Length: 536
Image 1 (cartoon, rainbow, N blue to C red):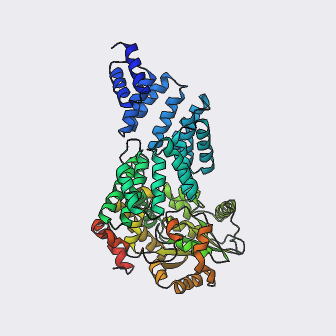
Image 2 (image 1 turned 30 degrees about the horizontal axis):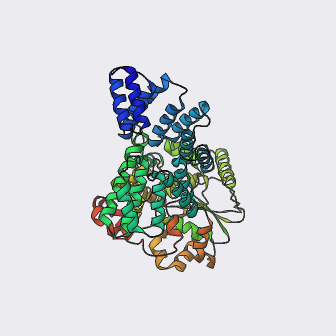
Image 3 (image 1 turned 90 degrees about the horizontal axis):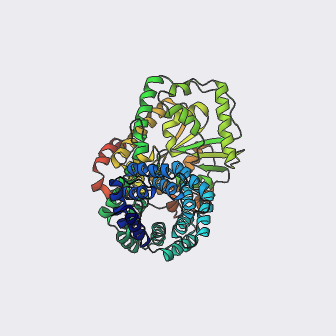
């Protein structure tokens, strides 16, 4: 077959939507020494679908070198980065594509996906709306808009966008995910399990979408009492996430959550023989400052809503209020000593920066009890002790088995901490290492701690919340019983949002028993803490 005939055949197959046939011919052409951006792009597509992102990007780079202004190639590069959970790289590629072709709908759609992954929801929506306007027959932006509405709990809007996408393409993955989620929210668990079982292996479903569908499938099977199948679905989704995010969190030199906790313990033992006396720099006397810590899925979101229902309390949910200091003093090796040696002038500067960040979030703390909810701050309690020695610490505690199982089952944004949540044994070891550090901190840090038991509160709400209020300098207020209404009015961005608005119930207490046969190694790791906390 001569070159002209070969390219004509490839174009005919593309026109007939025979993508595999076109790729077969492209692979033959490349093997014979042909060098053309379309050929490289086609071959890269197959490698990408096979999960070989490195090989795919190498071919796309060759295509880009041959055609640097080709928007479709830049778009393919962006899509490849998206599937590797690298949205910043993806956004650069999509922006370059739009530089050369400003009205290219796929690049607007891709940019929207990257922006959403980076947390810029408003710009993500703008990009998706632009893509849909440019090509009304393009289903993917409609699916993306459905996802955005879903995360804002705008059910009707999510359904409308999803149905619009499916009218254009009955297999559009994002719309499929949204409709399955809505069916689950409506309690139609049998229908969801059937939907996902029949559709999850469609070739157009990207790995991150597959992981989300696995988790949704697990939830449906769990609601049906099919716990063995549910655990298998959760495990499948977790394995996908670990594979996708491994280059970011499991490479040489990367420090995931368990490794970080173990290192902090070593450095604390080596460097901190006695914690320095509290500083005397001026505090904010008009603020009753409280940190809510513990471990994710220990009931901190529920407790925050209860506290926020008090008329004298303002609460902030898991915002990065101390990230610069955490990075400087904990995430860098051998940096804890720098925290210990801060001068009072440096402390004043950092404390002022903290309160400036709080103000930037629109929170007025003057004359109030201010609750900064940071479950993962447990590792970094020496930072609070150094900067805010007069702050009160609420330490949320729940049965370790329920905590670990819930972290494994729920969907978190991936970072160095939550990467370990996708491996049940490493998650359990991380929990144990965190609690080990907490015990050291209880003994050595000049802070006021109140340990709050989730199960005790479920059994005696008024009694336990009254004790909590006394510990942090508040009077119990009957409005705290109305936390469901508070939760409905607040923008809760944690995986606990759905449970909190259901009110107080004991359904999650001892839930681990449904998965006991699958949690053997995890329970063995957790057993010392199960015993210590009285859950044996």
